[in-house]
Length: 60
Image (cartoon, rainbow, N blue to C red; front, side, top):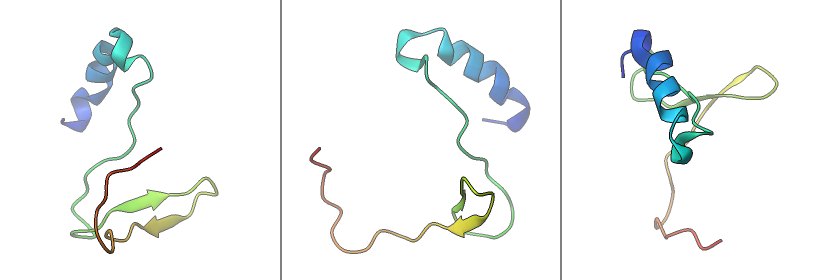
């Protein structure tokens, strides 16, 4: 979704009972390439590592 449209789409999603808690959790940037960055609760940024080992289904 284009950043300019994100707010409008989020409003529509929140009107549905399955999307009432929808939120924007990130955005796509040009740099750094091929990286997923996580902004922590303290305001710092961390690189999210690729999954290691077998990707098993979560059993919670």
